[in-house]
Image 1 (cartoon, rainbow, N blue to C red):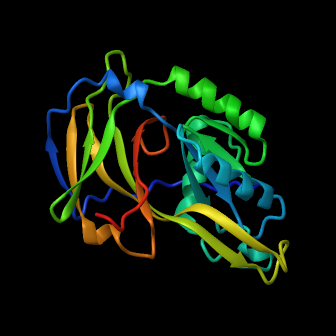
Image 2 (spheres, one colour):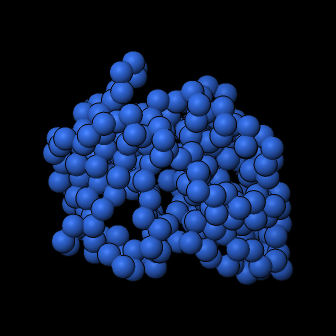
Amino acid sequence: MSNILKSFFFGLAIAGAVVAVAAFGDDSRAQSRSKSVVELYTSQGCSSCPPADALLEKYAARDDVVALSLPVDYWDYLGWKDTLASPLYSQRQRDYALTRGDREVYTPQVVVNGVAHAVGSDKRTIDRQISRTIRRQARVAVQLRPEGDTVVIETGAAPRGLAKASGTIWLALVKKSEKVAIQRGENRGRKITYYNVVRELKPIGEWRGKATTLKIAKMDLKKLGVDGCVVLLQQGKTGRILGVAEMEDLRGI
């Protein structure tokens, strides 16, 4: 399936965050612990998506991957309104296509490290894109740690030679799994489990190539029934992902 609409960028919100320049240490450490980011654009109304949804569980279990499911809403008209979808995720997918310049928008679609895409059920191609993009991309260290009533997000400075040393710091609130009984549409009668479902994705700060610290109130993370959170450092809003950190279990913070 495919659907192409005009793109718009939603504004950068920094509410609740405190931004400051901070020393971070040697950014050469970032590559050794870097992870790839695999974003799956899926829909409960897409009959081709269940194999991709199942495959994402395997990527979620890998130590070298941060896997995220971002359900889109543009197939709702087929008879079933996706219970996890957001129009913001649909727009993010379209913005990726515009940034890449290929106008490829479909489900199930995986976007790898912000720069490459593949059919979400095609493990061989996804693995090839992970290997290719992680080798070619400059990486910036990102860390998360609890501190009092906040969670501190630290990013490193831009490595030498990185063009366009600016970008967006994103916060994703993630539900580890969600089983949905689909009653209408192309997947009528099926019960499908979705993994690492993004329940909220928002920009929380700007990165200008310098080491940066943000502080987020813990209470802002513990909502929507989520289990964990992920922070992405990304060129522009839908460019290369330069760094990622995750906190898989928010219960203990």
